[in-house]
Length: 308
Image 1 (cartoon, rainbow, N blue to C red):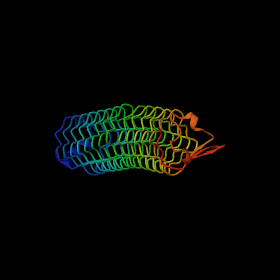
Image 2 (image 1 turned 90 degrees about the horizontal axis):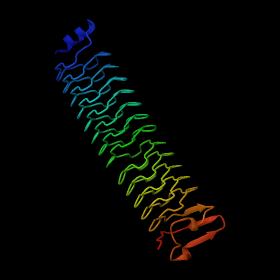
Image 3 (image 1 turned 30 degrees about the vertical axis):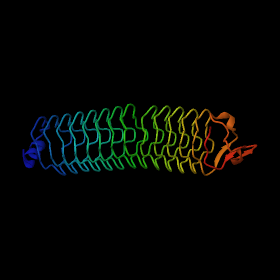
């Protein structure tokens, strides 16, 4: 169907285009508010800068389509195929994208605040600077996705696949990541204050210069994690596994390390454990006790340590 025919039908009050074959159609910049495009074939279609607010695209084929800067708030794209689609700068606030296929799609700087992406496939998608505050990502596949500088505060990620995701500089303040597997993931410079990593698998995770104030790491496996220059003020690290972790120049004021496993943990800068004593921790004094300066107010460890 040609652009002018579709627009004429819309002007005449026609809203149901479900199941139509609209492959490659150019609808850039058009206003089609509240239209029904469910199950339509929109492969390679151009909806850039179009107004599609509250429209229904459930089950539509939108692979390779151009939806850059589209206005589709409160729209419905459930089970839609958006593989390799361009959604750069798209406005999809409160839209439904449950079980949608977005692998390899470009969602850089898109706004999906409070959107529903439960069980969506975002494998390998580019999500740099995306706004996902308050979004539902339960069960979503985000493996190999680029979420650098993404805003995820208030988002729900229960059961999400986050393997090999890039979260450099992402905003995850207060996010519940209980039991999540983020082993080897890059969270350098991420904002994670108040987040919950209780029981999480964080083996080899990179937290370099991350903001981790008040984070709950209780029972997490942080083996070989990198906390270089990270801010861990008032973080709960009790009963964690910190074997071979790097805490060089990390801010550990007020941290709780009771029951933590600290063998071969590297500090190198100066570990301040104010008002605590080594007796609380699951380790023994260093073999070379000359490196330990006992103080009434706490313990100051000025070296890279290896506990027996």
